[in-house]
Amino acid sequence: MQKTNRTESIAERSAGDGETERGLILVLRLAALLCFAGWTWVHFYWEGPYGILLWQDATYDLASRFGISWDEFVGTGADDGWLQTWIARITWLYLACTVLTLTVRRRSYFQMAGLIGGSGLLAVLSYAKYVASQHQLPMFVEHGGQILAPVLLVMALGCGARHRITVGTAMVAMVMTFAGHGCYAIGWWPTPGSFYGMISVALDVEYETANAMLRCFGVLDFVVCIAIFIPPLRRIAAGYAVIWGFLTAVARPLAGMSWSLNYWGADQYLHEAVLRAPHFLIPLYLVILWSRSRSAIDAEAKPVT
Image (cartoon, rainbow, N blue to C red; front, side, top):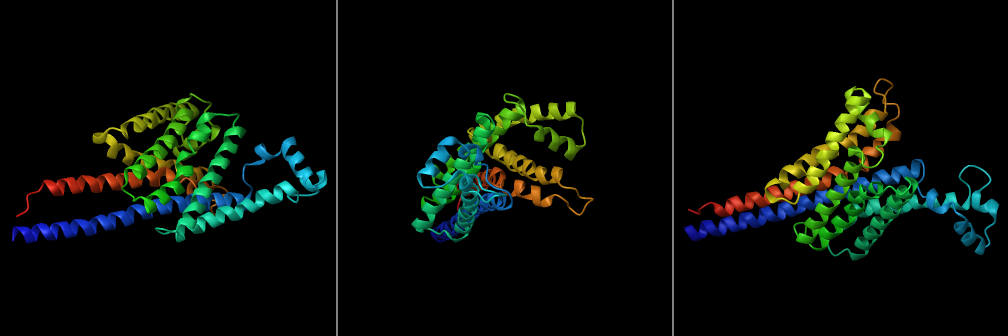
């Protein structure tokens, strides 16, 4: 009887592990999907931030070698130049990556390679924003969660959602996001005006209060980055990261659009929340993982009757 109960317990645990694995992959799939979808909207509605990298003499010299004249390079009207045309075509690459997050499966190596390429696109985009910010390192670092979101999905499918490499990469992604944000919030680099604006509008407070709150949030960002590596504290740290990552994401559309004017401005700000989905979904992946691991340990500790 005791052997039968033990066998049933092992079978139930195995089924639970499979369900947990699928749930973890779903969270990472959603993180990559929303990130690519948000950036696809940015490229479609406006254009990517690549101008700082491409509007240079070296780029024109390269184009001229292919017989492209100055008028063809810069265009004669709105967005009809060679450079704008090719920047606009990057939209389709992001759209393709968005679709891949839905279709990729285990052993879909070609699709996995496409997602790794999509991670490279996000890295180039983040580098362009870093250059545009006059080489402020936190600008690039805080995009770490977005850059690594498709990589994490590929790792989860290829190695397993609970593999130590996947978990370690997720922890790095989370730390990069919060460390980059913390550097700005604490004031080590010039705090963006949008940070003050979001807090002032969302909480209806004055500049002095918003500034004090930002400094506190910045300290908490770094506390989370440290606590994530301390086993007794890591679930709490990841749980806080889920909440704070979600709130900072939705703060963009809440502060930017007008509720009294039929949500005017939603098309300009909703994507800001969508593309930041990895900021709270990657910590959510860690919370689920570590919660299930804790439950498994507790189950092992219980005597089998």
